[in-house]
Length: 283
Length: 156
Image (tube, chains in turn red, blue):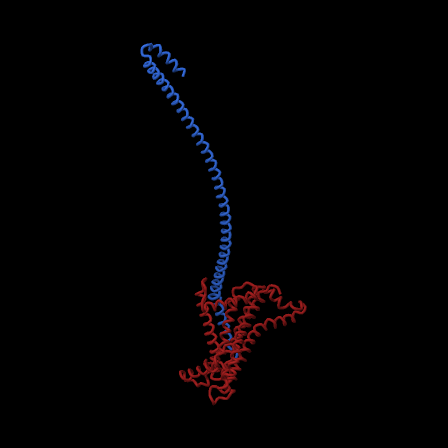
């Protein structure tokens, strides 16, 4: 719990507000001092915390794995190298299992989504107040900002911008590979001539269109919903008296480890399956 | 919870990360792992082959040993036979030689005997003549008696 003067509602709201840098309605750019200002900025704004944490975690993943890739040799691996290779093996097995086409992009795509999402989800296990309070201390102490105006949301995957950002990338890949592999005509045919034949074309287009759009939407919302709910429960637990918090936060954190891994795995598996569907020549 | 430019930023970031992973991380790791797998497989195969070769070599060595043993036995048997033949031959030659030497010696001996006898005869006749001479002294015509006696000695 941050400070005594805060009500529970304000505490929760404060925790759910991103650090937003954007264009104010009067035209100048700056950090939003509260949720209303952030909302007024509309689309012309950045969630600095989401972008920052996701970048740091993604870069960390790439840095560590690049080190392992540099040291990869025919000799027996040891330590971290071993871990990296077992992850590669795991991803490779999954991709081989559900992807039948030939595309050098799919396996690295699956690896990146899996590890990146897992790392971002893992941020949920950092106690909810540590980083936001640290940010408030830094903001107030160094930059002289009112601590109530310093927001920090540490789990990028609880931001729909993050999850939709990824799923839109996936959606673009689905469209690109569908057209490239099946050919434009065949792809349009797939969208319009199934499942009822050509006399029911509008109904087909509607069903297949929903089917197509549901892929990125379900990907993004599933991940976002799970992580947001988990984060919310951590915040609610943090409202309890400090001496009782551990009895709830510990079991929830242990359970959450499962969700962290499971959501990353589900996202990765679905990405591979969607890629496979995009590469299938015959419907 | 507002949808804003973060969405675009994250999409771009995602694309960059995937590109980096595809370019610099996935291929070297997978290649190294495949190469290791292959080398291990090769090693196992070589070991298997070595084992087979070893068994084959052992079998060959056994066969070779058996045939060599047989050959050696044959050779020994042959040598035995040959040795017997040689001994027999040597025996024959030796007994022949011995017979020859014996015959030669006998011939020599016979000659000696004849010679000795002749000498003895001469000596006996001379002795007789001397005896008769000394007994009869005068009445003997040495020449006539000598002829008689030498006739006599020849008939002995």
